[in-house]
Length: 327
Image (cartoon, rainbow, N blue to C red):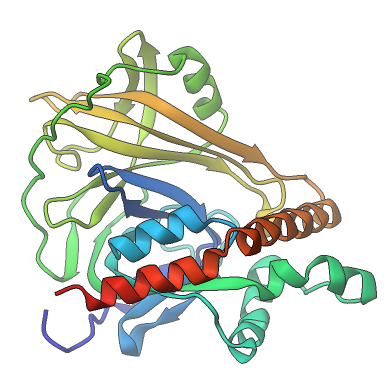
């Protein structure tokens, strides 16, 4: 890459500014990828070639992994309850930096932008105290984009248009995990949970180390795992570690339901894909806004209590400093 920022099209910019929630993926030390849902609230600095999102210090493990290997990806994979009707599936890959202690001014400046996606910020003595950590104890993930890939529709079928770094060849198969590749969870139960959640993406580590996120559909399950349907050419043949996200949400992310998996993906020479789930986490948010805010506030308070107790900010700053000193 030269020093010029990646410049994406107006059509892609509309998608980036419009989606309510996206899939965010980072790589693991074992060579896998984890994908979770985040709300980027339209963070888009196209002139600088940057995008981003915010998260909480209450998730230090995710932040540690991003600092250790800053190659990340965001998949703009659903227009539901957003502000764009453009049907494209957009994958942005880049290198992240973590603003662990953002200024109050930066946090305050984000609020009007966030209100477009989540509605007006609730104010008042009780609400201010309850939501202090949720609103003002945030961490910014700033991503310098190195590649944008866009497909004409949300299924990622059809021709791919790439801006920035050329698209690399298919990733080589990975070594099987020591504990085996087969399912470690009940595949029928996993399939039932995924079937109830309409938005689904899968992530794996690509050839150049950046996560690749693709949309998937569930075609059934058996003892071998979950049978996935993916457009031809999006998944490399062979076996590899992979993460999956399935979620559903209402306007302003009220009633959010999400399920994340890690596991093993096997793709044969014909492109048939079987995913063996190994771990699973999920949650369901309250379906009413006030209940959601109370839940978010209490969860943020608990997360920050844990983060302060474990000195997460100091540990992350040391990790970032050590990473910056590496040759």
